[in-house]
Image (cartoon, rainbow, N blue to C red; front, side):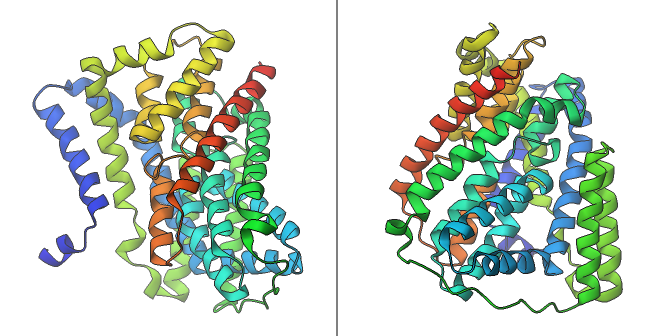
Length: 396
């Protein structure tokens, strides 16, 4: 037990502390038991989805699927940085949209950094591609971001309805992100090289396991397109991957696969934020956001959500502001979603994905210039949010 406690990081202790604070709020009556029960009932399917999709994605990575795709993208670029840029941004955006932003941050980042080491490509452009698109490409589908699941539940929308309203804001957001990535990190003066050496093929340790993992990914995406319950689709995919590894490589099936940190963090948030809302936070958010619809109300919600996300993290920011948005203001709520998804690219703690990304960069000794990260991120956040909200209002 003592050994387990010693392995906990500072961030782990913060997550546990947040859950403890939430439970204390319920025990002391600061948050009524009925309200707490309603919050936990609301997020139960979401927690099931998060746990299952991360286990699935981790095992897909262990099967070598991400490594093979990344290497083939670099080979397809044939040494041309512009081609590689387009391929890598498309890859990161698709992983975010279909497998969740945390998958991009946690699993795709180390793959991209390993690719950089093998080919001599500068690591920072690849790293920034994953962290920015993990946030800004997370608008399109309910699975892309936890905030999307909350918004879709609040609005009572289907997956097709949700994607139908957000496809244009998502396209605009990705386009703006690509411009900022190229200007700040990918152009010749920033990356420091004219061409790169295309990598050779990546060997696959177990071809059968690789094929099973690739098939599971395709089936999972098909389930999303067919609008099957996403938590059940993720659970089925995770079970298939666990069964495949139990058959072929049991050594990879460890307790570390289970993302208890994320589940503890989310549960704690959904107890603490409602408590704070009862004692002043809701009033402050209501004053900042307003209750008016239309263009003004949409931009106020987006700016409030994005600004608060960079102060306290996007998930509590979304839940705090969502509570004060009138039920009939659908565009205002979707604008809030844009602010809390695209906006958290300024501070390291603005989203959980960014926090996890920084940890990978630290492990791989990738230096991220703080001033460049903040200033470039601020420019991207402002431009991306303004443009995406404009695109949302065009589709109203």
